[in-house]
Length: 227
Image (tube, rainbow, N blue to C red; front, side, top):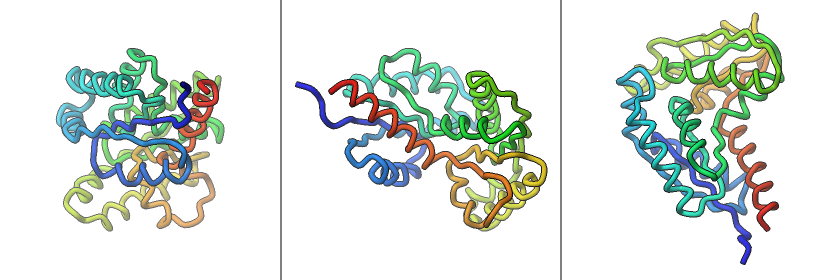
């Protein structure tokens, strides 16, 4: 009997993203079932070690395998900081994997040559820049990437000073707008600051909606092939 309802499993590094991504999938792909695997120990380990560890890779691989064994039709990686671990895990399973920031990287490559990447965490900045580089190679594009690390902003956020965090991020992005073709927001949480920017002369790209729309598009193709 063929399946008529596809299932996506989202692998998260924080409970914060669960409701927002569920809402986006329900809006953009209401026909699909959404499941979640959350391990909120992953991101603290990445931050403490300045990047992905072998233990983080091992857990991500286990989660992706579990998603496949549970019958998922697609796995969605929520966190850019573990994106390179997701790449390793994706090679170990048959189930397709979509990273939340992949479509954003593709759009950035199509937008222009000089791309600023804004991040409040060094552990997200590096993987996002490398994702842009690899995506540009896949698309036969040449990029000039300008990394912008907004130091201190993340500390303000975890201290509960969201307004100061937002102000720092907005100012950093505004400072790049005059000399780039697009700004990539490396963390999905930065979507909250976009309204504060107002109208901008170049695109300021955020990943959640773009990433979910891309995942829904791919999942529909998968389900069409399977039915």
